[in-house]
Every structure is written in C-alpha cells, then in structure tokens.
Image (cartoon, rainbow, N blue to C red; front, side, top):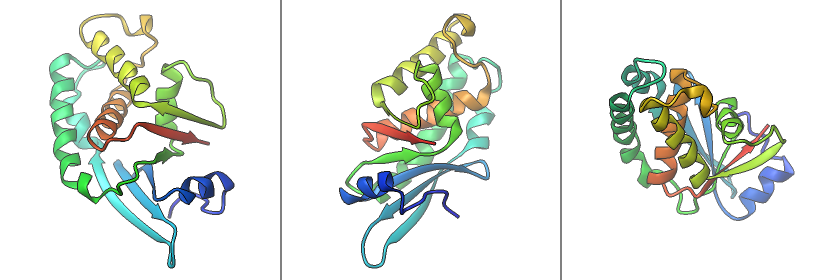
Length: 171
C-alpha cells in the first residue's frame, strides 16, 4: 500500500506535469512506484534494488574503496534492466527517512519539503569516498553505518543512470 496521498495538493501539482516516480524502501528493497494521472489513474511498481545485495559488498564500517566499487557494480546490475521502464518525464520524489538522512548530511534542515539535486547527492557520495580513503568520518559529518552508505550509493546511481536531476523529499 502506497503512503502517497494522491489527493495532496503538492502531489497533484507534480502529477499535473506528467508521471511521478516515488522512491520507497519496502521489505529491504528499493521500490519505484510510477504514478500517472489519467482515466484510470495508473500505478506501476518496479523493484529497483535489493538492499541486502548491496550490503554484502559493504563489509566494514566505514566501507573501503573496493567495497564501494563492488556495491556500485551490483547496483548498476540491478538498475540497468529497469531504466527503460521509467517514464520519459523524470520526476523523483520520496517520503522515506533514509533519504532525509542524506539531506541532513548535506547540511539541510528538516523542512517539510526540500529538493536535493544530483550535485548535492554526488557531494555526499564524495564524502563517503573520502572516508573510505581514510578521512575520519566525524570530520565530514558522515555516518559510518553500512545502510547509510548503501542508500547514498543507490540514490547516486539511480539519479545518474536514470537521468533524474533531483529528488523531492516530503515528510
């Protein structure tokens, strides 16, 4: 069951311009729900990535560079078959706390709504890489846990390979 309230004015505004892809975390899976207005309204659900498969590669906290590279390769293997199933209009949104954690690391507050662009996600990814190369995580305000790293890696790869310029975060 989707947590998205399709009657929400914000959501309706997004749908006015075309389909919206909602990024969810459900049962250790990254799920993409593609919502499109029409008669009837459609909702397609695509499993986009398995968190446990990503975590298998991230053995240490913090992850090492070779672990990040292996996780990225697995994420790309999971994403490539589904990219063509996504709508041409690339609007990505989420209500998931895991992605708000990325915003927090990027220096954003806990507003009701914000938008992270691909460059901001890339900057958080680069901090993970710096930590993997030996910079203390607390110097860069980066959590050392594997789940945070898996979420950042997945979002980065999704945005790059599926050509999402930004992700809208809502509470």
